[in-house]
Amino acid sequence: MKYKLIAEVESALFISENVSVSHQDIRVEFLKNSHGKLTQISVSKSVPTDKLDNFKQIFETAIGSAEFKISIGADKKLHNELVT
Image (tube, rainbow, N blue to C red; front, top):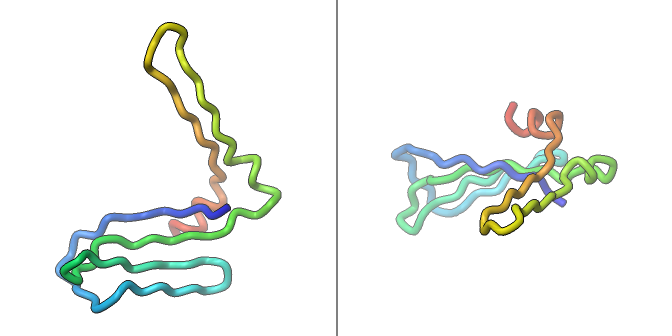
């Protein structure tokens, strides 16, 4: 399982192709639109096996209602590694 954060980019920077850079266990991707303008940057990392339980998904529905709630766990340490 991979944990990935994606940020929308507002800039006037153009790149000729999508760029992916890996360092140790972190991958950073610079993504362009069809015109070559940089529109997204993503950063991802594999979730360590001992942290997989932190990402459990829970689906809850209300009786007699079409509304539902989806909860997805997280790991603050892993998140902070990708943000900093």
